[in-house]
Image 1 (cartoon, helix red, strand yellow):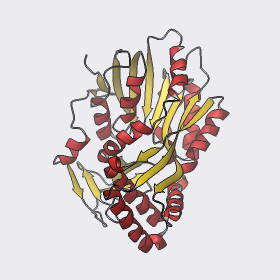
Image 2: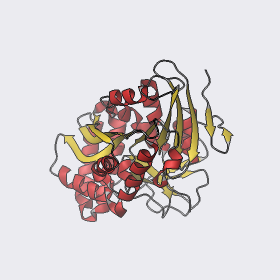
Image 3: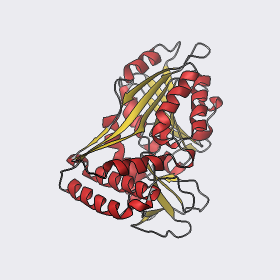
Image 4: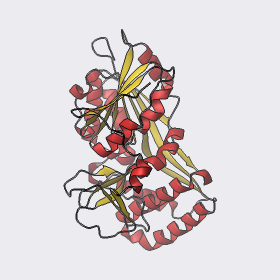
Length: 359
């Protein structure tokens, strides 16, 4: 069985290298620990739970994997233009994918399956994945749902859309065919028309990098299309590190403040989304989906620590000296296999009222 991968307005997608191969190609060069990026370079930043790389001066607020708190490595993706929108770094998305898959709530799948099974006169489902990145949501969800599926992958970065389309699943849980197409666009400007014919909307690590208006628009679009929404891995604003450290709470508070910069909702996003969907008549269910990071996830923990502390220092520069020592201590414990981290997230399922006899 072949995997149908198409891009709107551009036909079939040729095979592209995966995130790791792309990082090793000549088209991507990494400059470690660069504190003064040159014009045209892209700057890695932490937005919610995803690392974002954008042109210098156009960085999504946050902090990403970096050598020291407050510094940022740079990555040049092909020939980045200073006016290009921020990009999500595929290397980070690849690194976090196993932890994401382990964290997502299975308890929300049964009510979702019931809704999809009751679709009138449907031989398959159309699923729109918003801000798809490299397509990890589809790789997790498609094999857990029965029946033919057609995934519409939305992202504003064609570079990531290639990854997502090529690495998409080929079959559903029962062996039914899964096909995929990609649409380039800004999910923050989603309209009900864009979701016409959708039976399900999904997203992962998206809500916390949206504003209240953007979340309201998302809820309205889903309600207008009459389709449920499964929105996973939104940061909850709580982190637990073992063993504990006196600076843990202060770093966490500064990070949460950083997440709320420029009108973004950060850890308040799930509550805002639940309210917005409820106001549109949806039945909303929430379930925790924490990362549980131990010695087996040391590489992810290391990068998460650098980003977490870096964002806190960017928000609170007065923390820098103490944060440097804190980060060094935490990284040493991580390398020794002595550190465990729980990063709390929340998954949301909104069962919107069907429209016109269909979901």
